[in-house]
Image (tube, rainbow, N blue to C red; front, side, top):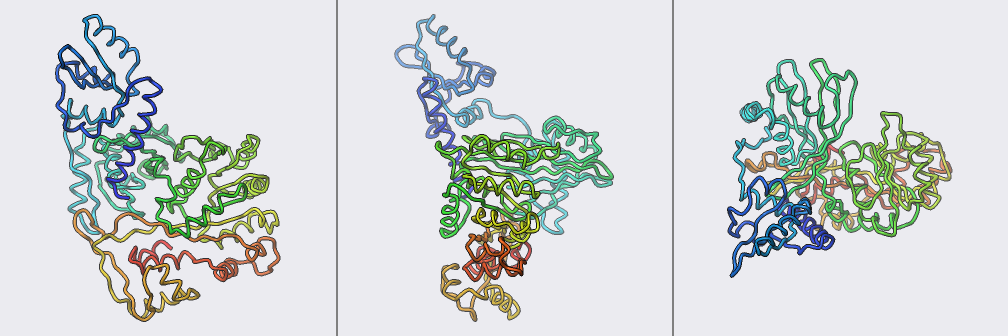
Length: 546
């Protein structure tokens, strides 16, 4: 789904919500998309200040008699509408009101009262050794007004699709870097006098102290407007004292509930079916594993969203809450302040939930409580730190020992990575013999028919092409566009349960993975090489991530 389709999807959702709101308020609903940029404006009816303050727009004035029409939003005070009805009635004039979306209102206001502020050049990511771009962006950031620089940085990070912003204190400057598609890129080196501006904004918005001598965590939100359509940016803030001041990392979560959808994760139909089959059962434990930034949270939220219905009670325990989802009870767990997932889980089980998501299993107490919950009529979802599905079992056995109850509760382990997706400027090449030996070794155990099915064409192990990233110009400086999911799924069968129960003496990651492959599991590395054969990514990217 490209950016335009995403924006259209957001607008569709907002218009549907506005239409429902209109029924509640007893106002006629008006979808302005077909005319909001073309209909003539109606000047000199109400002041611009009133339009801003009361979220109201004049729509029409005319006819055989004075007949006024106004567009209002859910933010318009009812008292304003009632007062206007009375005032126009006193003069024998008719007035009608229509409810429109906030996005529609914003488009009209940009026409009625276009911004007069200075527009700064968009931030560009510098490639390796590109000192000219770095200097240009640095100059821009140093010139942005004091009251605008922080918002400008957030807006630009969102426009670039950055997952986090790093603000780092050097001896002579403040270094700004952004992580885009999983890679950290230098953006600018700005004057040290901007340090207090950034920290002042973080202090007031995220609730962190500028004088703290210990690491801190905070949270903030910002509305981002793109072409008159708004979306909410959730920002997790982490700070830590360094030699020259407090460094900060801002993790950006571009929240759009409609995009938390399993169908939008780029999974194969086989992977989707396997997940849906497991989570459709009323009880059991499902674990997501992978390093930070591998997309675990997005996948878990997408599963939760798929299960979200009026006949299910769903509760989440999170540290912190990254996305707010309608219809779900989400509970923050402050682990830095003494809270624990285990205590929280024991408490919420008294509320008789059908589905529980635990942010992370970090200790044996939480693991045992989650296992107990999963065998007593609850579906439990959680993340767990391990590199692969087989490693997750080894780690869990180290944590709680061989456990017959765990063997009957665990239904699936999913390991996930995000790799950069090649853009259309990619170029194919014939791999050398060393590369072919590597591909053959990784795909060993998969039949030629299976490989051909997974990559979508007949695979000849002696004659095939791979692809490399080639920069495609200013809009595509690295040859990659977005990221794609590489997922390893291990459904727990009797062969795997033997390890968990302790029926097998040799309990190690390699032995568990060999057994899983024997029963049909395709590993992360194999999935990655298959993606490279399809032309979705490169072997270099697979080596970097997996």
